[in-house]
Length: 292
Length: 276
Image (cartoon, rainbow over all chains, first blue to last red):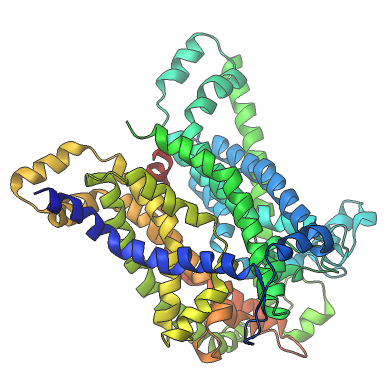
């Protein structure tokens, strides 16, 4: 009797667990193993170097330092602007406005596009002479601002970020809309009777009740920001002069263009490590709460 | 009187903001459409956002000729992988929420951590693994990998939703004499449909739009999905931009279709994930 009760869960879990172990767990652990070596992926010559790859990246690789900085900038931007915009959209569209389904679709549809499509579309917009951005700036009298945004190392990352916000704000919006829908009307009605203004209702009713939603939004946004790849690769391929490299793209270069397998693996493990340090405590805390 | 005027003004203001933002969101695609409908001469002579001098609908036919095989590949991959993934994830989520199991939380956290693993970290070992079993450059090979990367999020969404399903329904099934599998297929799955529909959309989109793995693991050009295929429109010496933009528009039709069709489930399904 006890034996049967113990095996069933594992049977249900088996397909997912097997695939998960084979595709994610073992390869990433093997990648960790590879990060301690100096290897080009094909030759039999594989030299053990211990932590040297990790040390070199942090102390000597200026592109790695740029990539790390870019990821942190990207993270900060995502957490504030993208989530903030998504929240604002959700709050506005949660009311009984006419045409809210239309607006919801308009703000969400870019998320449906692939990073490559977004990159192609926005590269057009940023074209120095013929793109719409230049045209628009001229029209509103700001033509000094018109520049080859994507070709200037100082502005390229931010230009891509705008495109990323265009693509990505719809996801937090949809998650917040879902969360807002679970909030009953009673607290609001009581607050109005008590004479609370909109800011107070937002701060003392809406925000606390959205806490679970914030968890998911934060977690997915943080992870996404650390892993960002498609849109950057599509718009600048990490250039100009490696100014828009992020950890994922620099890892791609090291592994597949330069064949420095050990270094590429080390970069990806830096990425995993940063994600874990930030997210794992957060998730454990939350999942412990939902279990009675 | 004053309160309702205040409300009208604030509503009006909101609409203004919404419309301005909506324009910002729609413009880029409109320009893609303009470019797709132009002839190359028109494109070179005028700015990118001008309305076409002449509507070249033929561009779509030409782009279709080049892109249809990639679209077919993407369709095949997505239509097989997505339902399979949902089944695998639903079974696992069921085990984590419904079956008495000491390690539920731990297992869930273990799987969730996988979301942090960037695909790049696994590429070299995966490449070696696929080569070893002879599945490199095959659809089963890449579908296996896609399934793997879809597991953390899929289980997150489905588990969240299943946690919210009241246990009384399970107990009714037990009285009727269903086994666990019966409970799964006849009670939990039908109730979890909103979450399943949500996952269907999101997973279909993610699979259709996937670029990195497709770029690395499918090197045979005739087998490539549409994301990698679009890049072939950008030639080594010159790119036919009108054709590229027409191709882009064609490539997003299926995802738009799936989105529009399943849209109403999206929010309600998210509710489940959010509450979990």
